Amino acid sequence: MAGLPPPIASGSSTPNPPQSGFLDTIPREAGHALETYKQRDTTKVIVRFKATGNAPIMKQNFYKITASNKFQAVIAFLRKELGWKASDGLCFATDNHLIVNYR
Image (tube, rainbow, N blue to C red; front, side, top):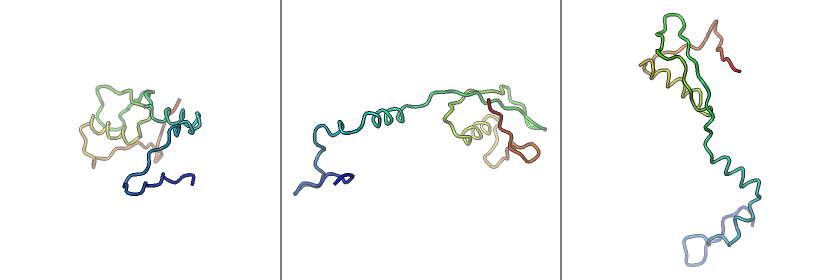
């Protein structure tokens, strides 16, 4: 049946190996998609930090990071650069709004 693992041969605890040509049955587009998915995205973006209020000013205010990083990675990096603990608050808001600039 399609979608089921190969049967286990009698007297064996492992499934029979796939028949030769098994990988040839995967459509070319699916194989290409899998290879693309495995590749790491090396695209970089610049993150620019700007101190507000009485926040400490950083020696360098912009950094290049991998575009696929999550926003949490930016927060962790900022805390590390400032020497702050995870419990120390960070404020990204102006007038109770999160400001995200994009281009």
